[in-house]
Length: 58
Image 1 (spheres, one colour):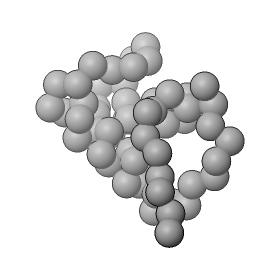
Image 2 (spheres, one colour):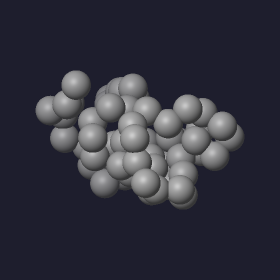
Image 3 (cartoon, helix red, strand yellow):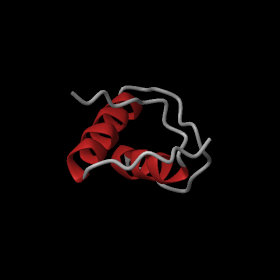
Image 4 (spheres, one colour):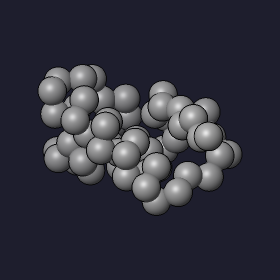
């Protein structure tokens, strides 16, 4: 489920930040990873293209 949309660095930071907050508050992790920090887990999920976030521009 790789998304072909390109994100700006600000959008990427917002997506990873929001996801890491979810993980820190106990949300289940979507991928198998050896990471233990929420921000690193979120970055791994972003890189894998599995995050269910959408960006509305306009």
